[in-house]
Image (cartoon, rainbow, N blue to C red; front, side):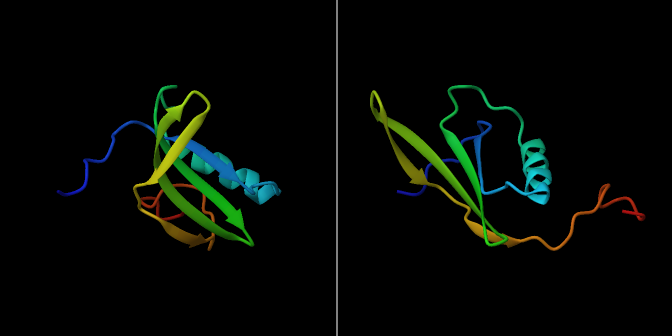
Length: 95
């Protein structure tokens, strides 16, 4: 047995609940973390904002019929709470 190897395809990204000005900024940051996927990528990363908690989920999907898909969660899965946003990188002392 064992798990199948993780796909290295760039994921499609689903962002939900990022409507405020801060949410739009976070949305832009998350979009920049992932390169643009190929149209046929079956890997999906979703980030959902509910009450200032961000839920991260990672799925693969399989097309079962012409207009139906089946999701398979492959992980990781975690919840985030925004602490702060800083300009710059970790290597920069002033950031």
